[in-house]
Length: 183
Image (cartoon, rainbow, N blue to C red; front, side, top):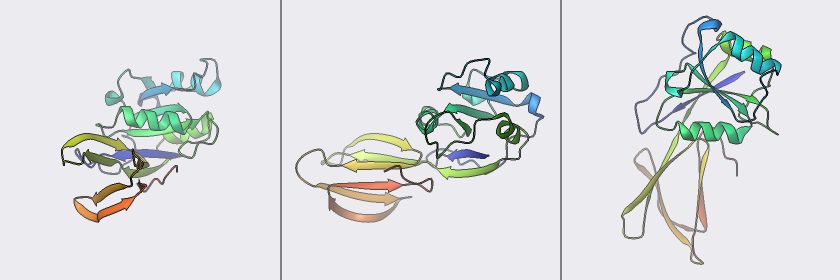
């Protein structure tokens, strides 16, 4: 079982840690049931019988996502300003970011037997041709920037305030975190 812990470098850094020490019955879980798993399914039933469910991700020890990689990325994006711990059970197709969907996997997580993988979130700040800031976005695994016209794009890439490419003229740029790219 792998638990993902995002670190938002634009906000306060979180340190790598296991889930807060509590008994499995006391863990607070924010459940994202993207796959719409029925309540009588064994894993869903185990969750509702063994943890305290919270309405708010901020109140939870763990955000548990039921679905595929898309559901996990969507949950991370919704909580991008917070430093939360995520775990996923794969009810999708491939699930590179997810774990096997069964009660044994879930027990490992609830009893702190899961490996915690810390991943820095990427932050992109975008500027127009005049140098005016036009937006800011966060990503878990990658950003893909591509030209919006028939002309090549002119891109500067900085990582942690250090310029990596002063001026890159290309059709686009792909920047990936340690989680890897989906491209």
